Length: 79
Image (cartoon, rainbow, N blue to C red; front, side):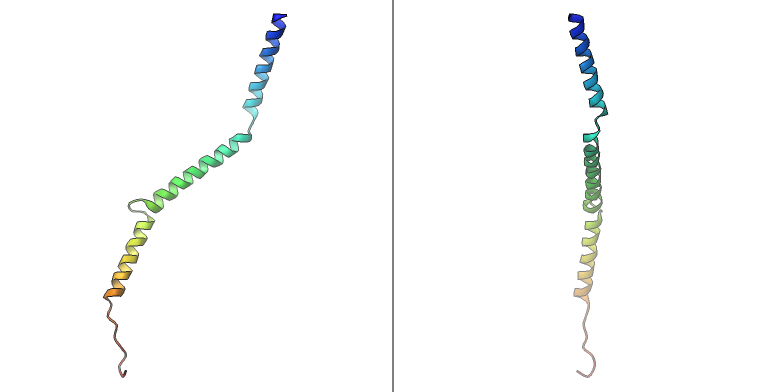
């Protein structure tokens, strides 16, 4: 009788492990989550780094503002 119970327990555990190993439902969600994290880190590194896109864009706008403010405007002749 004890042998019968231990055999059933063994079969139950091995079947449970087999089903758990073959279950792919959560794997896709985890993969998409990891991909989203990698993309977010990449965006932060590219756009907000010390020499990133935002810093370069800000520098270009400062140069543009400086060029506009230093430009001299002349009125057309005859006015």
